[in-house]
Length: 567
Image (cartoon, rainbow, N blue to C red; front, side):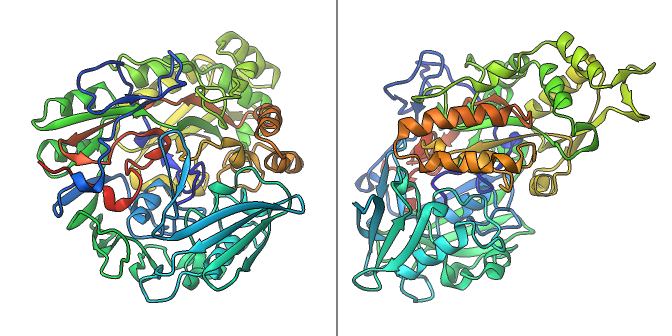
């Protein structure tokens, strides 16, 4: 996994990121902890039943839903999704983990020691690899895995399709240390975010670009993995991925005998949970929460989720090439009304988000979007008139013989997603735009996203790294695979990339906020909400649920610690 999944790695359809709200002090929040530093409007909560290995029973099965089994199953490849990372978590190397606040600790199963020094004004990091660490096919995990990861992710060779080169592009060399089990990483200058890199590694079999891009398409390669579990069954058509304890694993023994992901739409997963077929499910709205909260033996785990949910406006669409038109559309959308739809019946409110780099509870956050766009339908109409789009007899605007008719695909069968899409269509109608809603199954997400098969699209990102400025290029560089709006021009790339090379965090935050303001003036993406999340789980499930930066995939920390608590 990448330390930040603000990337193609973590792109999930809004359907799966319609994040449900929380009620402070509710009696059904088992193990909920409130982190310090939270604001009254946006409380930082965790709830995941943290348990040490000594409190877990050995054995047992765990079955979990997954919205899709993506075509691309290499989690570092740019067309991968959040679900790719979920699948990879249990059988691929995880070199580091976060705590709920985002503090990074290293996994001793893979790294014996990590040291950072400054040499000639340059940040240098030395990784001592655990002598026992091997890939499942018997090859040593050595310094060349760090070199190959850097080569794939640094952005120099465009044949590698990656979600981001952030951080890796600032490295000047990866060299062998005192022996093959030591990697020495040197940056081009001081680098603040070195801990966020190399959280996972490229296997030698996919070191070349062609294999990196294609070897994992509709295939899993357990022999190229290394973790407490390995794949026991993979059926993409049947929608099943199962794991068993890895006989080649050298670390602490995993606790489950079997773990299975089953592909399901959200409505199916709710029914499966009620019927006892799966052991955990996300409740995305009040209706779904009502279905699961009364299931016998159920525990609700609520917590803030480090997510950004947004609307993307395709600047390559003929009707949306003019930034003035894109701005007018945004002015015609009432985000507060969409938030009410999303959080209806959950007793939860939050300020409208204004940044894709930092969350409202973080130091340095600014409401950048709020400085540029205010909901005002009258202003939106005036701006569309000025751009030459005049209202016709049918109420739909037209220019040069073309109507302002746009497509809006929705993903999955969530009732909230449908209600929100209907509301957006009505808002567009109010300013003279015809919005055609296209319902697509969850499995179509990557097709819609990678092919930019939309005019407007609702989607979301989850971040497992608090260092948002490190990923500014992922959001705003012109060649980023994440930047599907394509509204930010290539002329801004130098300014965007310069942010992460500034020597202090404070300087990066100041510069990053200025860059984001300029990028948002291209009117390509519109923040909708952040929101918390609710997991309904069977009582006794340990180290699984909502834990902010610690648990962006539901899975919390070391995979071998997911299991059932002793009775």
